[in-house]
Amino acid sequence: MADIQFPNALFAGTFTAQIIDPSGAPVSVVDADGDFQIKADWDVGALAALFLAGEFTVKTYVESIGPGEEKEIATGTQAVNGSQLYSKLLNVPAGTLKKESANDSGVYKVVTLLTHRNSFGTLTTLAAIEDGPVVYVN
Image (cartoon, rainbow, N blue to C red; front, side, top):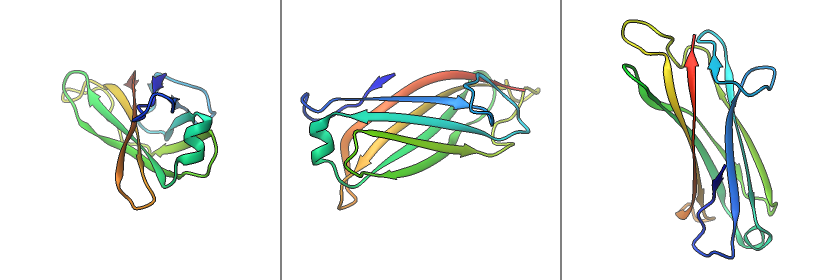
């Protein structure tokens, strides 16, 4: 779980992200030939919920441990709606991550980023980074 960075300490929030398989169960091993999802959940304090407008963006990146790729694997947006609780499912299609081979380790560190843009489309300083998990692709 990561704390959401707000410009004022009175506005608090947390952010989590996990990899889930098609059944909805959290996993650390994914099938290279199967789809999976990133489930991001975050909450903002009551004061923040009153003042926020615009939209959140959730992006997930991977970096290979050993030989392999570094890339963005999923992105999505969620409109700010005055709520304190938010959730976003990001779909990752089959074949996005390569399994272990001579040129790829099949092991990836996953980082999911939450950012915010105000009603004018300007990126704000509100952000959170969920570092992990590490996944194996087979």
